[in-house]
Image (tube, rainbow, N blue to C red; front, side, top):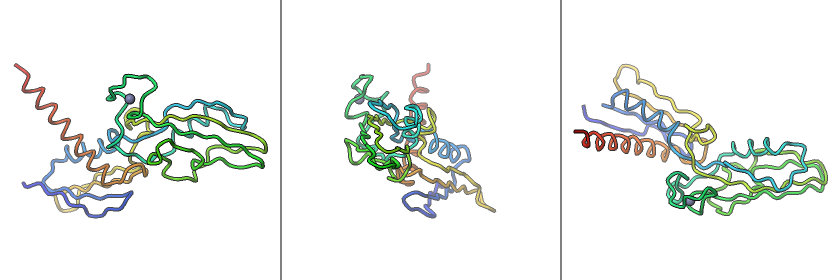
Amino acid sequence: MAVKIEVVESDHDKIRVRMKGVQRSYANALRRLAMNYVPTMAIDEVVVLENSSVIYDEMIAHRLGLVPLKTDLSRYVLPEDCDCENELGCKKCRVLLVLDTESTKPKTVYSGDLVSEDPEVCPTSATIPIAKLPQGRKIKLEAYAKLGRGLSHAKWQAVSVSVLKEVDGTSDFELFLESVGSLTAADIFREAADSLRRNLELIASKTKELK
Ligand SMILES: [Zn+2]
């Protein structure tokens, strides 16, 4: 049967793709790859220089890790794929975001207070609360964002929803993806399809090497 891929609905954060003539196992592989394998940027390391808030350093680091960051996969590589071999990373495999804030009166610190060295890699939402600061307190920290995959930690998951269903009365499948906002839903689908292709090519080439 001829393979047909049709986009049923699509906006920045959501995509519904109908697949005709695609085996369930491949359709399901796309669902899993979208969830576990498509990389996104997330804050992975936090160096706290000053923290007189009432929240522990670890808790602030944890919250920062969960802030979705806008991701450009054409400009950054996964740390394990980078040629810098530097534990601290380089311009191709990490981005520095700085948080430096003081309170003259009680206030909440938000994701939007982070200042990124790359304006293209910034929180997708400026209104995610990080900490409450009583009057006269301070937080100063450096946060390092890196590309990662959902399979190593949920903070790198590109999608909040990845569902495959059979279309009634047909052998078609529909894959529905909802992005956390780091990448467009269409980019996530393309990336998932691309990693399926790369995986199959790798298997094929390794098989050829067998005697
Ligand atoms: Zn590097």
